[in-house]
Image: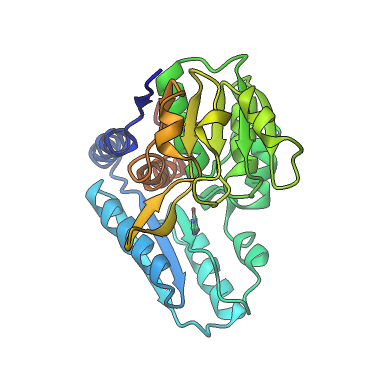
Length: 296
Ligand code: GUN
């Protein structure tokens, strides 16, 4: 079987266009412009690139973007004071604190100081608990993007066997919750899993989110399975720098029914879902109906 390529770049553009349409409607009919505040502490180069890209796309869909760049040695008290100000600012509907934070800042404390209704990353413990109990929550962007692509490809996921490789709070655990919510039979595999190849071979859906370049070879993939590759790993090959996923794309594409490429798969969906979450947060806070097809 030669896999269908799931084009995350095109899908993300479609999601952003949907968000932009809804934003235009909100402005026209309700006089409301959704606003997203992004907080960056320090000068981590990768984080700077992400933050710039988020700001640009926020403006492109017609939302207000508020960027707060703080010194690397900002105190916890100053950061918490900024978050408190953003929590109380009615023009701000979404707050994202870019991770990782410098070592002297307590990440859990900082994330849990964000108003859960404005927590567009879905990392606040209240949102984690709401998702885990099947209640309305803010859902982490990368797993939400993966879910949207899976639903788009399959329609219903009910009854499918899904394996999530990786147990991070940002991707693996919320991904498993979302798949469970869509009635999949879910296994979370990780570095201590016994006989990982056999576990993966049983799966109709494989979500790889470990951050290890090409660790899933094609012969672990069940014929016709759908493979969602969350990994973005920079490697040196033939003297060049290259981005590869957690899945060996060439061999997996020979067996899978559908597969996301790296780059151009899950990556672009993350920011699209951040914008979708900001729109959702804005609608909820104003007592308006949620945008259709953009939530879990
Ligand atoms: N750093 C890398 N990915 C993310 C993300 O999804 N959210 C935040 N806040 N920081 C990140």
